Image 1 (tube, rainbow, N blue to C red):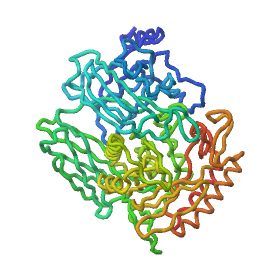
Image 2 (tube, rainbow, N blue to C red):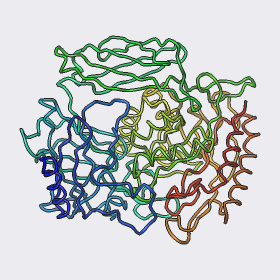
Image 3 (spheres, rainbow, N blue to C red):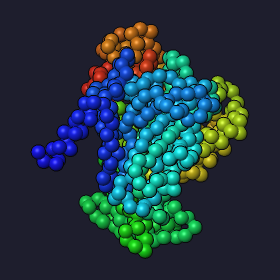
Image 4 (cartoon, rainbow, N blue to C red):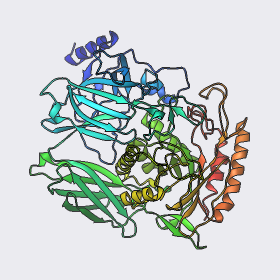
Length: 613
């Protein structure tokens, strides 16, 4: 028997007897942990077809940060130990079992599916080994998303803290690593859910109607990457359509000094463009034969950035991409203010997208599942979506970039509510600080994605405060996109659009000289389909129908009413919504993504009729 076969036989025996085996990553992709047989998704509700593809040793293995990709990295998704203890209790001496990261503990795919609550704290623990190929490089520990208050220890030493449920964060853990052998990570997470003022979106302790199951803990990829002593921390890409060039700024871990940077862009037809500069300063690259990004032609330029060191082995190289596109307000030939893409008016039409999954809640079961939703919307004739009071992991926006779907990105809501005629709320200093901290981090993390064309500050008065100042603050953070100050209800006369909601609608706000008129939500046509609902009875929709034919007829009627409004000045419309979510059955698709509820061809034909020539 060969040595290779002998090792394989030993692994099989270990698996059969339930022994966890660690296989160190080599050169990049993942920290591989052989499946522990005790993990199974927890049933009881509907699931998606991707559930059957999940293996604990290979869950969400795709590179999590596509616009700043390094060759070497180590994926820490998989089975971790977990424990639930009172919020004030110290790190537990023993743990309760295993949880599948990156699925939140309330989800079926976590293998646990239990609520946590404000009174408790969720603990995680796992070990890993640093690949020998990383040598003496620094090691960064990345979290794509953890909800909400996170503390991290490495080998018993606290490595960092973070507050926020939607923005990625990173800790340099080099100084806490042992010289060799197993390294231990312990994570604790506390989440006040709807009893706090933090941004939380549709999460509540007691789900009902349009309010959904709470999400606690890690819900997106956890990963390690090696970097040299001085490394790239951020790359800011500003494509400029009007001058056919791109402006790039590279920032380094040592901001006190400037370091040489080399850039290469691969453009239309494989044309190559090179430029040099230094960290912290803007580098401009002219683009000959430029090719624009749009939903109909989502062309992406490739970008390589290298931070040069005295010795080549200490260089830091990242791979990225960008889309050459411009989003702006403009005036059409009739004198009506419109949304323009690449200096041409374009009607924005697509669904409200909640981003929830019956098996993973906030976390899609697989990367293919993330892509599927976008492919369906494109096939149905939509050119955008409004990502509703939730922020996705960066892989999601990569697929929007690549497949060509524009995104209006909401800031997740939190704190108190107001009605349409009420004044803005007065947030506490802590609440306002958290809103701005998270929103600025989200904008920075997603800045380079061409698919994102609008930031939405507030939804239907929820948490709405100091609106004029917030709108201007967002513009100061990102002057390349439009800003919707308030989607629905409490318009303050500021921002790039005047945005109304109407169910089932449609209706259009009056045209204004300085803002585009948009319909931020309408529709909500509900149809529960037996075998595909979260619960058997008492499902909810804004309007209820009993068959796909009835639903299709009603939908086509809405679109027929919408078209004349576009001719008279309406610049965008957002239909509620992509999928059913829990007991809300207003989706184009069922919650499990198994059925498109309307006649696909008739709906797509009607949708494409809104793009007036």
